[in-house]
Length: 103
Image 1: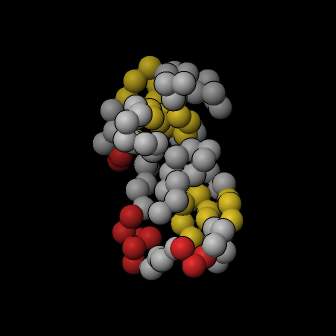
Image 2 (image 1 turned 90 degrees about the horizontal axis):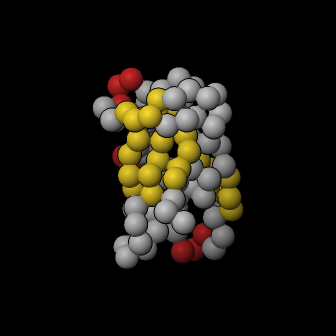
Image 3 (image 1 turned 45 degrees about the horizontal axis):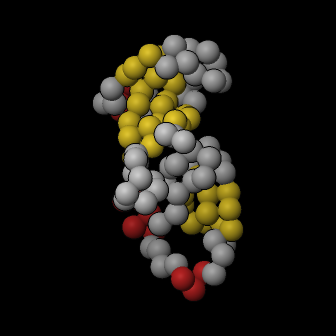
């Protein structure tokens, strides 16, 4: 499993590339011998963050893309277990996704 460096979403394997379905970021898989994926694994592990039907809580947050002042939010552990979770935001208007780290 590989996560996007730009938005933190899980990436899908396409040929010799990892592709993020959320933001479009691509990166090479590297040594393909070290990866084992199946179509059923990748489809079942995709988490979509669709707007109104997401069930995510909302908060006051300024969207860097459109300036809207409301966003859905969630937290995800993407670094080592001894480090804090990363907060992700999704704009309620344009669905732009960004993250906030503790660094």
